[in-house]
Image 1 (spheres, helix red, strand yellow):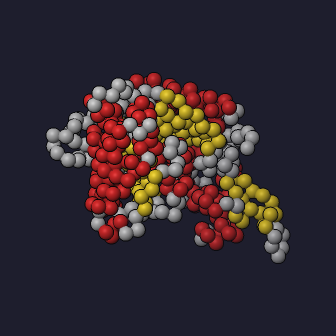
Image 2 (cartoon, one colour):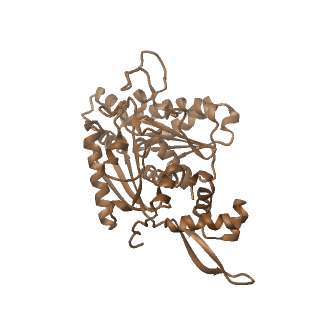
Image 3 (tube, helix red, strand yellow):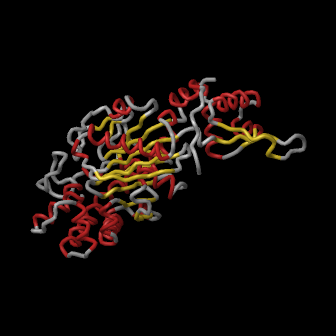
Length: 399
């Protein structure tokens, strides 16, 4: 049975999203004949993706069998890489994270060093879960830079020297025999916020304010990347005068160059404060240091003014603000964002708009990756490869 006819993928999607179903229920909901449903179920059961339970549903005659998705058919590995730290996780095929680990890193050390760290964390997670690499059905990596989709290559990343057009999928392909997906970190954060916190919201914008500033879009319930993967890069839109501060992207006056974490660190140093890292700057905010509070309030207003344009253009129902600077800046940054969005956006675009602080930070990225990759491997060519493999991967151990 081929995925090309759409039936196998549709039946699997139905079982994944709606839980245990009988053949009759699948026939009613897909419009396929009972024979066609049975053929597709046989294919999915043979691949270990669907399991049947005999006689669970009482009927007038013999109890009907029910079929449910086998979320323990394998595992998914995910890594949300930031400028100075990362979070890796192992999830089941329903996107539920079973293991998580964090690590400090420096993304400027280049792809070989950083990805080797990621690989080491993946190996530790598999060992803790008592899984072999053959159980890995998909890998997702989030990076703090623009990604050309679907090639999985980072293109001219401002804060990732040495990563330009590096073939991340090929690097992992030498170590794992499964699909590899690379996404901009702000995209997976947006998807995580949508699926976990706002599943009924079809139009959502998420903004990450950390070392840099990025944003992701969910439109009509789907992650929106744009034509080439460049959608949502609000951090490198222009703000203020043409002679604004120099940005790491090569332009001047970018939002990130005024309001990003590295800009905050620069400005504190210019004021004579002996801070060397963003963590030290965030500590100053937590302590209520006047210069740090003033700068983070200014950052909030700049970010809010920059977001007014996308709010007018896209008309999202929810804007989620998260990231290290938001966690540390709290009300000081958030109030400025709200003020400027409502001041500079049209009344119709803000009439029902919710602007909320993320409650998922710093886990939104790995949560979004686990859900996004779980969806991706069960469609198109990845699903066909699983069906063709026919052998069943080891199941997860434990709860």
